Amino acid sequence: MQRNLRMYGIGALLLCAQLLAAPARGQERSPAATRAAEVVALINSGDQAAARRYVDEVYSDSFKAFAPMERHLGVFSMMRAQTQGLRVERITEPGPGRADVLARSELTEQWFQFGFEVDTIPPHRINGFRIRPTAAPPERAPAVPATDEERARALEAYVRRIAAADAFSGVVLLAKNGRPLMSAAYGDANKEPRRANAMETAFNLASVNKMITAVAVAQLVEAGKLSFDDPLAKFLPGFPNPRAAQEIRIKHLLSHTSGLGSYLGAGISGSRAGTVDEMMRFATDTATAFAPGTRWRYSNTGFLVLGRVIEKVSGQSYFDYVRDHVYRPAGMTATEAHPKDRIPATAAIGYERGAAGYRSHVEALPFRGGPAGGGYATAGDLLRFAEALRTGKLVSPAMVRVLTTPKPELSSPEYGYGFTTDAPGRVGHSGGYEGTSNNVDIFLDSGYTAIVLSNYGTSARTISERMRTLVGARPAP
Image (cartoon, rainbow, N blue to C red; front, top):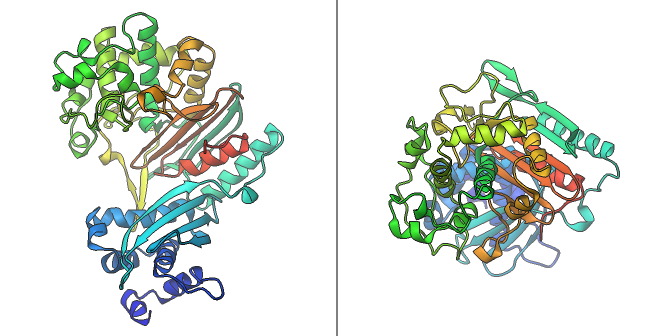
């Protein structure tokens, strides 16, 4: 260990790791448990230089090659920003060279499960690890408030504490039956010149837009202009992969079971693609990874293609169609897909935090959001969208059930048509991109709607999970 202390120059950090991994009396500490505790201690330190040295010296060659160095370092910085430090509650060893860590954020009270794989022979290099949020142990779960007033107070105090630590910037809205119970804005919409977030601030939605695209398709189904079982080739006979166009049905595109991938990348970010047709030029990989309907794989290209189908069937551009048939009927007056050279001054700029401070996400954005995501909206507009769904303003109640029902017959047990359906009675969508982190939960049975829009990457999930707890809903096991 003394060699490691000199090598990394972080003796206090590794001493902390030793303490975290301390075995029960009479048990010998395993190398896997020690490595696991070292990684958690590095996250807590926030020391990027130490993390870089650790990756160079302790990760196996294959793990280092798995991703660029900046991506490895991003795991440490992201977890530090999201949690402001972790407390290890338990380390278990399910097998040789393996260690599982249950840890809790002291700031957000969110729980995480780490799983480590480590060489069983010296110097015990790390071959990989995973991190996922997990539910609190039943005896440590927060209590559910008895009244809506108590829920609102508890939520406001929770978010205020996280925002005060600069771990959240954005807006939060909890409503019941369309009436806001708690709504508040935190942090800056723009850091230079400084402008505070407000409830009227519009945020980049990322994939939250997929719900809007799905509703637009459902409207055309109800109008008799297409069917969920129609093949893609019926509308796009010139699709670059003719065989795929015959096999892929509209329902596969809506449920992420088409086998198509994602058109988003550096190419489109540097372009001026402002129409769906122009965006389609970047969907160059139209090979399907599997037979449609046999597996689930998230597909931005699939929803982009749906936007082109909407245009073919309706005779309008995608943007005009959703403006006329979704936004206006729902009363969404502040929702639009703004090109990035015309983002309104009232919109939030997204930020990612790195070793050098905050970096704006604007240059990383595609030129314009589209059917797969990237439009702008306020929290109030998204509440109006949720209420328009509930009251039949956009599609019939029967069609809402079709959209928000899981599709296990299509290998999509936790996703319907454009809506996440991973827990009973709760539907909606999340959205994430550089400097963007959002979530919309619509609780169909209880009438609650929970909306989080953030211009910090990764910060919405923590608050969304707390809102689910406060309204008495938990994720499906």
